Image (tube, rainbow, N blue to C red; front, side, top):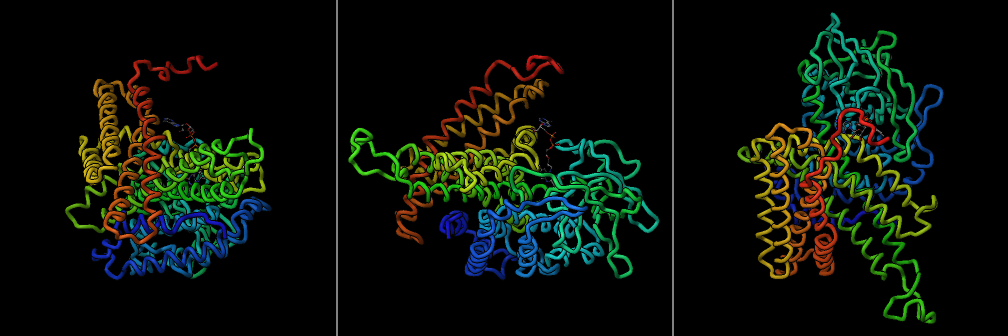
Length: 602
Ligand SMILES: Cc1cc2nc3c(=O)[nH]c(=O)nc-3n(C[C@H](O)[C@H](O)[C@H](O)COP(=O)(O)OP(=O)(O)OC[C@H]3O[C@@H](n4cnc5c(N)ncnc54)[C@H](O)[C@@H]3O)c2cc1C
């Protein structure tokens, strides 16, 4: 079995870096312990090894498609949803009362990482079912919960999120799908939704769509959007009857081809019923619960796909003989034995780049999930702080693994040389699969606007201060070790670069030049997320160093030394890039703000 993720790295993050076993001291998680977490992770890994990874190429080859009014997906989707329902993983974080296991989010994200690295074509089906069931549990009536959630958690009914319309993608304020109140308290739904992941297939008995629409007479913009449960088949007199939801097609994509992306039409026959979830006109606020969880999920999936690509290219680099080491006489000395390409510094650089991106990204995703646990179930007095920190991290969790995951996989593909470009090897598939991650769940551009426009200035900068405090804690801990001191110093300087750049930009916001303030938000995202991942690396290296010094090692000495080595790599090759970002952000020229439709790009 080829390696696609590292259980050692995952356990290191969970138990040594994040100390998630301490979560079990909280009343919410008191029935759980580290041994239980480990049994679950091992069983997910076994399932991923035996079923998910072996069909990963087949899911791509078969793909999903539309034929005779039906969406055809690889048959493995059916088996996967059935297993996910039977083993309880769809609702693992849900309350016991609704059939969940009350596990921490950080454990759920860890299980997700294993499964997504094994086969990212299947995981979205259960992920969206989890997210939409969670919306119903949080904001829906007891009747809606009883009607839909048990079948969703059992893997029998799929769930979706229906936001996007042809004219409303990034800008949800332009949604036009409509809802009209009926005498029986339901609403008549009308409209089209496009790009709906997991929206229809023959292996689920029913689909529960969580749809954003406008109630007749609602105000324009985001303030007039409500959320509805709209099933494909609605329960009526103890039976399921068609609910006038028509699947009009499946978008053919470059990657994630086994994961269908549907076009749904609601109410063409004027017979589509929906039920309000949460208050009228507050639909977008409710939907943010699902969107935020999905953003962590997308970041984790990107890190996971990049992980699988890393291990595939590592294995290849260990086996491929090509060229000679310079010190053995190089090409001139043809009788010197060939070396395997892993020994060429440039190939090792590409491998270390991948490792630093993959493991740094995963560290950030799991940290965000732990913050979510603490925000929801931690001590009352710290809940708001963790909630705010999670809000700040979320756009970076979505964006860094997705953007840098592409870079990592591209380097992995490069390691295979010409073979990397060929269908016979999996690297090209990972490269295609990861490409969507910077687009769905809010593009990088939109995440960056959120980070700079809202998150860093939240609560008059108090959230940003708490974030800096966390970084300072890590700097202090690292400074206890002489060999880590230069890196602690580098992170301190990087943090100052971040602060001074933000201060510079804020002058534009304060003088009313809002477009100027926000125009290079994506560059700011790169700067801030590069610093954030450096923080993750210094934290991991400090924990590794402590384990080595105290001898309290759960893994090999080499494992901990590798963490410190990879941190050093990230600090040498990636962190210095923020100086360029700062220079761009502080540059006097404003080259992208032009009058509407100016023909400079013609
Ligand atoms: C495979 C796939 C699966 C999907 N799954 C779902 C799903 O399950 N449910 C769902 O509801 N949607 C889904 N989507 C839709 C997805 O969320 C949107 O495609 C995405 O939000 C972008 O919207 P758009 O495609 O309309 O692009 P646009 O919004 O037109 O954006 C085009 C470009 O313009 C930029 N841009 C737009 N507005 C601004 C702005 N104000 N400032 C700066 N830049 C801007 C964007 O960053 C982007 O680069 C899916 C899409 C795909 C491709």
